[in-house]
Amino acid sequence: MKTKNERLTTIWNLVNDYAPDNQEKLLELLRTKGFNITQATLSRDIKQLKIIKSPNAEGNYIYITTGQNIYANRYNGKKEKSNLSFTGFISLEFSGALAVMKTRPGYAMGIASDIDLCIPHLILGTIAGDDTILLVPREGVDRKKIKETLEILIPAAKTEN
Image (cartoon, rainbow, N blue to C red; front, side, top):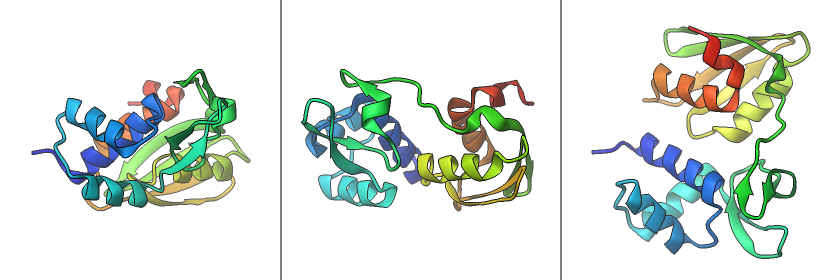
C-alpha cells in the first residue's frame, strides 16, 4: 500500500511533467503509477498541494504547481529546467528529523523560498539566515525522500554523501 506522502509527491511530479488540463486526466496518470483514488481524494490533494489552474502560452488552462512560472518554464507543454536560486548550494546534513543546508553567503533566503514553493508536501517550512537553512520535514517524511527530491531540484546535492 502506498502512503499519502508518496501519492502527494507523485501528483506534484505528474503536474510538473505532464501539465494535465483536468482532474480526469490526472486521475488516469495516477492510475498508471499504481494509485487508485477517487476524484474527491484527488481534489483534496490538489488543494493541500496548492496546485492551481493557469493559462499556458496557448491560452489553455492547465494544472501547475505553486510558484511555477509557466511562461518561463514551459514550451509546447514540456517542462524545461527552471532557473532557481539553487546555484548557491554547498551542503545538506540531517540531525534527527531536521535538516540543515549550508549555502554561499546571501543565498539562503532565496533557496529556502524556492524549497517552500517547490516541495511543500515534503517540507513543512524553512528558516533561513544568510548562509544556513533549517528544513523542517512534514510528519512521516524520511530523510531519503527529502534527499532524493532535493537532488532533483539541486543537481549539486547529488555529490553529497
